Length: 136
Image 1 (cartoon, rainbow, N blue to C red):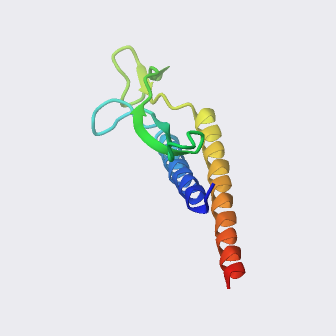
Image 2 (cartoon, helix red, strand yellow):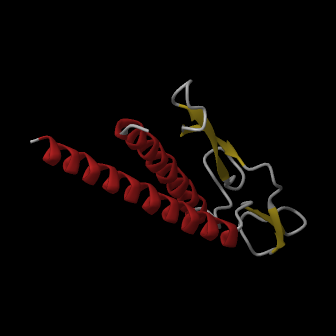
């Protein structure tokens, strides 16, 4: 595999993991928001990633692409709290469908993957420099 392809693969991975980190952080920040501009509680979002081959002759060489950022279809959490300003006539408050533990795991997973891709880029850069050094 040439070094340019390795760099492209790692770069696409860095971008995808950064998007995952941003979405997880947004979900965590809005985990208690019961009223949004659109009306109703905040809806958690999920990142959809897609693998794309970068060379026809080597289909196992794939970079990642952010296909979409979708709303999580799971239902909202309902909590009985009649004193809350957003409670309905039964005293039920609808909270976002954000699972804090799941988002923390997503955040850790994405940050580790980001570090791994950064390591690949650093190694690729070092190999470029060593190659240039040998060619002198």
